[in-house]
Image (cartoon, rainbow over all chains, first blue to last red):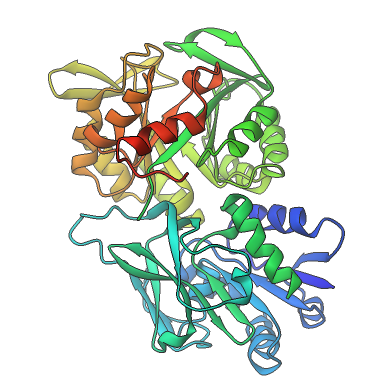
Length: 208
Length: 252
């Protein structure tokens, strides 16, 4: 099996690479690339994302044919894709970080700043928070409800259709922290930084 | 609910772990990669490396340590010490660091914080502030690992780093560091009250009650400690169980 981590200069992806390497350990072939042909021929795709919504979308768009290839893979052919952090947020129609920016439009919704209730909640939302599982998800196999995951973000994905939400976390309000629709997965938290439990989520994705 | 973090810090010099008493008289004890792995297996919420001689010596040693640690530890890794320019940050992130902490270079030029957070995202830019009390409710910023005094007010500086895109503040009391007499809670409270980004308390931990004070009285989002964990006085798990027993929420 070929798993591809999309390297589109979205910031620091070494932790994503390290964690997938740890789980794959020779059983799975791991590619880190922006090469369209390699992406097309993979079995699974990981779309990481760090920095702002705008900078990630801009980076994605700067590689010719990449957005179309990802769309064909995940939406048209319905093959497994996991977005992490801003990688998930970009599924939305629009994001408001830095400037209003068009997203991939794969899941209707928007990405807005977390309401910090006039400074009552510090931003970024950094650290370990419990996830509340909202529906059965293939990547949550053997993951207990209220497991701790590591978060670092100031913006949240608000989908129009609540049925895509697979988990939320409590920080000033119920924040969407995981989505699943068919073979499209996304986590707002960082499984690659969430210790053994995070590696388990990565393993679940690889084993799909 | 967001949990309060416990962060063991490993001071590294020439590839070995040390912990200074008031930043002098270093003791040598341990391989940083193994130590980090022990901490992460023991429930550390993050790991912090501080390269205490990086300002003067070559940077390859710490980069190699980060590279090896990042392949074994799957919790966030922060690295600081001698981070002067964008290239230093790029090198550390590529080696596997999740966040870098900037100290002297942020004091010299606040635009560096702005530039770095714009380029890499606020989530990976920590500004380390070393502060020393100069009068009642007034602290000044120190640089170069606490050796050089500036005339900059620590509270004003903290507000300024937030404004310029820092994602977190790592606040060390120079008066308390190495004394084991507890954090400077007044300093912590003054800074956490006037900023809206998470503050990591550092400098002075000698007992588990000090961790409690940092969070509950000082308002810190995370507590950093070195020697109490490093010399085996307490395990991370003991610290967490203690805090939990006093109704401070932690990841158990």
